[in-house]
Length: 292
Image 1: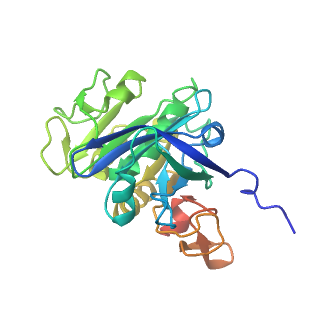
Image 2: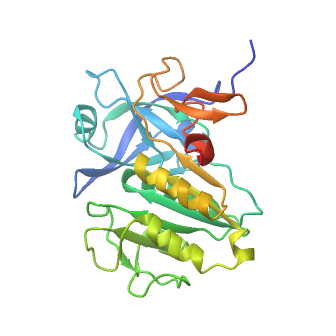
C-alpha cells in the first residue's frame, strides 16, 4: 500500500494548558505546550483537541501561532456548543489531549509576492499564522484584512503602516500584525471605530482596484472563514483572475481521514468528487470548491 502523505506527521500529545484568556462574544485564546505539534505546524493546519475527558469526540481548532523552539501552540476559538464550552473551562496547569498538526497547509509562491490574507471570525487564526511565516521571508509583502461581527479578540489600534487604496478613516489594525510590520485593516458591519463598514470582500475589492496590472500579477489570495464569506472571496478572486486558496471549516469526528464525516464536493479533472476536509484539506484551491 502506498504511504499516505499525512502518515508519520501527526502526533498525539498530553498538552499542558499554558494560558487561557476570555474575550467578548464567547471568544477564547488558548496556548498549550505541545512540542511535537509546534515543531511540525504549518499555516493552514489544525489540531484535534479533546475538550474534556468525559467527552470523547474532539474539536478541530486552526493553529493561530506556533513556536517550534519553545514548544507552544496558540488557538483562537468561539464557545458555541457543549464541547467548546467545556474546553473554555480548562485552566493553566491542566492537561488536554492534542492530536496534530493535521491537514494540508497553504502553499505560497515566490512569484506572487503580494499575498492578500482574508480572515473572518474564527477564520482569522490561519491568516495570522500565515502572516507570521510570510514576514520572515523578504520576498513577500503580505496584507491582511480581518473581519468580525462580534468584538475583535484584541484591542484594535490605529495602524502605523500606510496602505494605498484603503478608504480614509479605515485605520483600525491588529496590533500584533502591526508590530510584525505586516499591514492589516479590520472590517465589520457593527460600527466599530476605525473599521471599514462593510464586508471583507468589499474592502479587498477596493484595494485590488488600486493596483496596476503588474501589481495584480503579484497577488494571491488566501482565506479562511464562514462558508458564505469563502464563496464571496472565491468569486472576487475569479473576477480579477487571481489565484486563491481557501481553508474550509467543517464538522468532523476522527480528524485523520478514517470516518469520512467531513467530506465536501470538489471538482477534479475526472469530474465531481468527494474529498475529506481533514486530510485532503483543509486548504483547497478555491476553484475546486467554488467552480465558476
